[in-house]
Amino acid sequence: MELQGIKLTTNDFISNSNGVYINTNITKKNPGMLFVFANWCGHCHRFMPIFNELQKQLGSDFPLVALEDTELKKNSKLSEDLNVQGFPTIKFFDQRGKIVSDYNKNRDKKTILEHICKVYHHCINYH
Image (cartoon, rainbow, N blue to C red):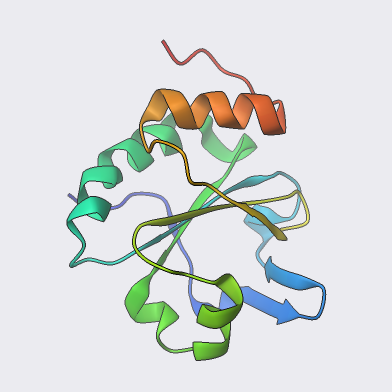
């Protein structure tokens, strides 16, 4: 399964004393979700179709972006600042691109959409 959507590089991030920011035009106006994955990870491969469906359903109003572990390994400080403990890692960012929270609930489409609706008030029909 090929991951669809926007793949980031370590150059798309800024890390400073205020936190970690995704610094692209895509993440400058709306909150969204970051998916950190590894191609060798079975859990990541099982989540990719869900990520792709969410990407299509949410569109640019709630951007979903991804960062591959091989890219993350290029910047150990970013890896440390993002606090990636395993794969897949799902985080959310605010309308300024700042990483604001980890997602540790079920990784099914319905639960993620409910979380997005509850926390970010970006509610869509998910049934």
